[in-house]
Image 1 (cartoon, rainbow, N blue to C red):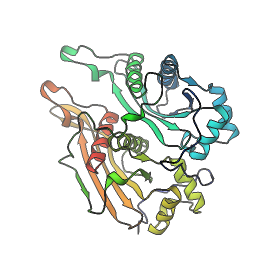
Image 2 (image 1 turned 90 degrees about the horizontal axis):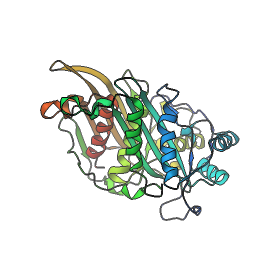
Image 3 (image 1 turned 180 degrees about the vertical axis):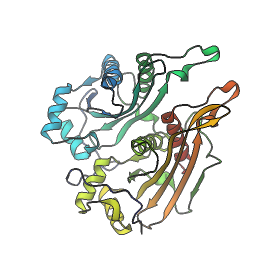
Image 4 (image 1 turned 60 degrees about the vertical axis):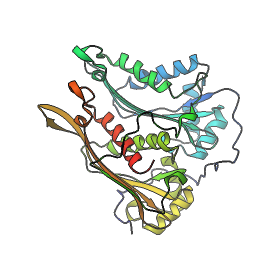
Length: 368
């Protein structure tokens, strides 16, 4: 019985069932060239200029490579017509409708978590390109940068304005696109250039009947949040999805698919879902394994050798809906000083970058 493990997730919108096109089955043929619909990014930074600062730059750079973008007012009109109120309401049915109305090959979905100006600028965001034919993630990136990250010996190289930092962030995001502006999908699942070992101060285990290489898609349940950051679960889940995409080629189902499945199964809240209902929800979504977890700490600062560093602590579990067992789990506690090398270089002072690293290490510990 999994009762009580999930925070209450109330249905925000009623949507019909939607099932992505299975792998190996042809979806609608994509139009010639690459055409994107950029839906309004979720801006959790609270900064009005963040969207233009990041994705205005990205759009112009991709257009220079030959990609086309659906005009923003056309995207807005289509979203209103189809009553799509939130970017996390984009499931297979909604993406197919958006493609039919606008001719977009892919939909870009982004979340901005931080966009801070000043002498110590910082920013963090996630971006993914969803293939409108089958709702699969064709591209994924998660970026967290601070101006001080570029400081070398004698304090040289440090970036002290958010515009320059945004240029650097967009340049890194563009590495996920090819020369004509299409998603560079062949990077998914490739071995990382520097793959860390599972952390010593965490744990990971896999039962004999669990083989991560057979998993194509995962569902994600709401994470418990015991930290002081209200956006911590959202950001960490997006970092996990990016890590699974790159480390193992595993797709993470969009939130809209979970919501649609809850409507089909007439579940109004996840608070009292037991294993039987979870299996039914998974069957509707076409996933066998669900991810759940908790954020214990996020960005809390500790003093190490007279310097302050952020900490993060998180636990992630994989539940097999067919057996009801937790087949893999990992728990990790990290602080920014753990990555410090000689001369104090390498230390992480940004909670977002620390979380991104931790998410990747957890995915690797789970066998990703």
